[in-house]
Image 1: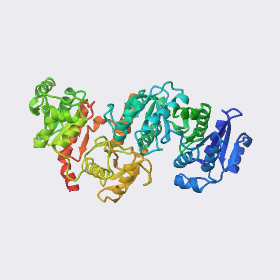
Image 2: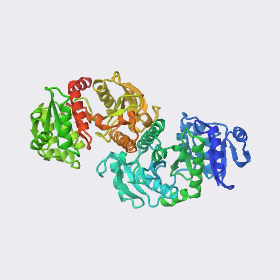
Image 3: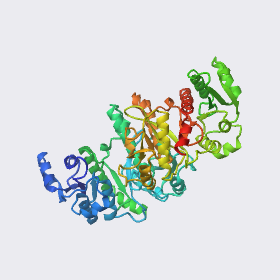
Image 4: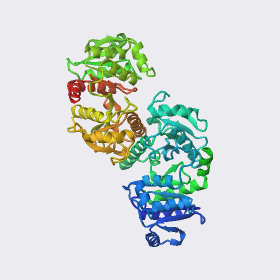
Amino acid sequence: MKIGLDILGGDFAPKATIEGALLALKLLSEDQKIVLIGDQDIAKQYIEQAGEDPAFFEYVHAPDNIGMGEHPTKAIAQKPDSSISRGFQLLKDGAIDSFASAGNTGAMLVGAVFSVKTIPGIIRPAIATNVPKIKSGFGILLDVGANADCKPEMLPQFGLLGSLFAEHIYGIQEPTVGLLNIGEEEEKGNMLTLGAHPLMRENNRIRFVGNIEGRELFDDKADVIVCDGFVGNVVLKLAESFYVLTRKKGFNDAFFDRFNYEQYGGSPILGVNAPVIIGHGISSPEAIKNMILLSKSMIESNIIEKIKSAFN
Amino acid sequence: MKIGLDILGGDFAPKATIEGALLALKLLSEDQKIVLIGDQDIAKQYIEQAGEDPAFFEYVHAPDNIGMGEHPTKAIAQKPDSSISRGFQLLKDGAIDSFASAGNTGAMLVGAVFSVKTIPGIIRPAIATNVPKIKSGFGILLDVGANADCKPEMLPQFGLLGSLFAEHIYGIQEPTVGLLNIGEEEEKGNMLTLGAHPLMRENNRIRFVGNIEGRELFDDKADVIVCDGFVGNVVLKLAESFYVLTRKKGFNDAFFDRFNYEQYGGSPILGVNAPVIIGHGISSPEAIKNMILLSKSMIESNIIEKIKSAFN
């Protein structure tokens, strides 16, 4: 198994990414290799400084970096030696089994769709994030940013993608699916959700439980909640700001602690032909470690093959 | 001044509404009359039981009630003796100066648009809510549910409506306006926000400060934040669920306390030819009291005339 990691991605790279890789290393077996993609001289230097042996990792030299503010499509095309471009080339060639980066989200999305491509039968991939549940554990929310505008037909697909992820990565048996909406009744909603609701109800590959209101995101009504990427992104960032506030104010609570992005490491792009994970820009070593462990879970669970057969 | 109150609206009516009216009464001068609209016999009975004099109020008998689950347009048409239908009739006739209800939101919206009508020049009215700011005070978020789908041209109008409300009701000098979006850059967004951004930037009647992300809702970047009614409703309910959670968990904090809907009493429908306020379904007496005080502020400030001239 080869887990690809962009060591140049994120606000605190390469220090945080390399420290995260070192943390993950201790939890992996010998045949689970982390491939560090980026400036290999800097990487080896950091590893030696940390008193570790650079030989535990594999390296692919990619000295160029795509910045957070760069235009995704242009940057991918114009920077073939960037860590993100090289990462996707390796993923496409089968030289790595997964690719993770805490860098430019748009470049990760464009790179994934251009290189390993969308799985046949899927209209558009979606970015998924986990949502802590008040009782215990996590649910899945998607899309949180890949598709600012969606067609109704995309939402049942997001429901199926999220269900497969919930089942095979989180071990949730028979996950239920809800549609994020502005009322419980089927006739409530905007044009998108009014169109999506009957499609979701009639789709027998998902366990649709109806509409979920903003106030029900954290309760047990649905394991997987679908929405367009605009709404999902606003919800994700709003929830994060609440978590940050509770921390700033010194509130300690197991539920709010589960909002901590560091604990789950990143958001997978679901619907492309390989495991791809986007980390938070402010990823700490702990977050990077968990992003690597999530990569491992996605490879081991064979989630991509399971998605392919579900959409076949 | 005559402040109209639907005493049958809300989950705890008529007890909570009448108790709220009694609380408000103590804060009003003699010429500020509360007009209780609903079953007048029940109202007088409650007031006497509370040891107060029914003569302090005016009454309009409307024994019928529009339930929370009823279809707004049908209910308004088929129940002329309902408290909401009678309330809007009185408002249209000028027999009351404002109308407030914690009942069926849809019926309040339909009733407002059908009776007192949308102010000329305004495409669609919007429901506004206040948003606590971390530093201090409140901002305004709109639309939070009147228009699930919006056209770009509506958002600068929401910005102007919110600005006038912020200035004349909350006393915010030169309020700034932000567009709720999924990135800071102008080129980020969905079709709605991509279309709205340049219209807002070019509109010289509002102080546009650009895009606001979900995580910035509570900071000081903008006093007025605009979005479509779908996104706003999800945000409102999500924020409310966070507040409820912090309360349940016993967290006490001045910022989170400002989420308490009871303190501000209700959400105005901005853009119609009279002050109309929708209360939370679970309105307590305290919330009803504050809804009456907000009605009074809207009448005293002459906000409707100010909106009319701004859109003239």
